[in-house]
Image (tube, rainbow, N blue to C red; front, top):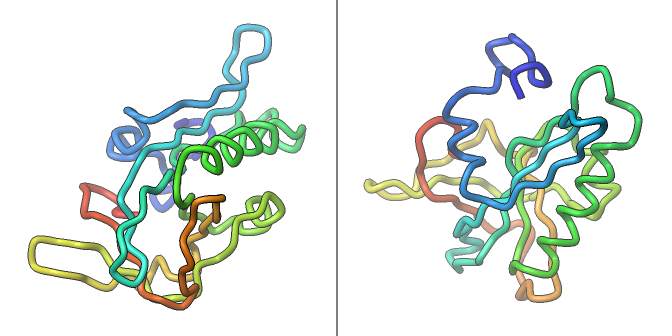
Length: 158
């Protein structure tokens, strides 16, 4: 993960990032004994317009830099997307790489974003435009412009 995300302070993969990814279902693509691509799906309760939804939240998606562009990330994310569609009411992830996910059926959330804290809702405007959702067969009717919120956690809340 450290190699894939690099050393840049903005993009660096932290211990908190790893803590967010563990405990979920991990998807690995291995070639010749080496892990080439990884993604994790953790269960989170995401609220849309105040309605709680059982959500498969995607964490720690990475491909070894020397293997990027070979389709391995797409293969893993196709499996991840299928898993979420069969297991959750909603899929969600945060990224600036929209095109990669949009071609797999993910869409940018159009509403405002918040984190739920002990003091109430706190707006997370820096995340808006980089939150993507995936509807599943069990997704209820939701308004794409409604407020969306996640539970608070250390590190990046989204």
